[in-house]
Image (cartoon, rainbow, N blue to C red; front, side, top):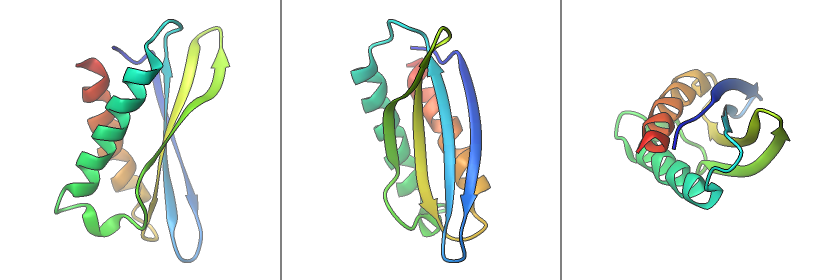
Amino acid sequence: MSSASVSGDSDVTRDWSRAVVDFTLPLGTDLTAAEAALRAAAEQVRADPGLAAYFVAAPEVIPWNNVSDAGVQVRLTARTTPGEQTIVARALRRAATLALRS
């Protein structure tokens, strides 16, 4: 599997922040396998001793977030401690990209 495009965003509140990573997967991608790969990658990042303290809740995968001519957008989100969403998003993006390439 390969991702056609990747984007990121963040949401910040006083008590927590949200890391958001979007992947646009080509039409015809096995979304069940892609979702499983993203969940495993997200849990791997959450289990990392250097990052675990930044997670407020378990990461979530939102399949079929959007559909366009470019493909199907799948969203990976994680609630983090305030201000740490960029670090978590970077780690999630890297792990998820590697997982989707496998």
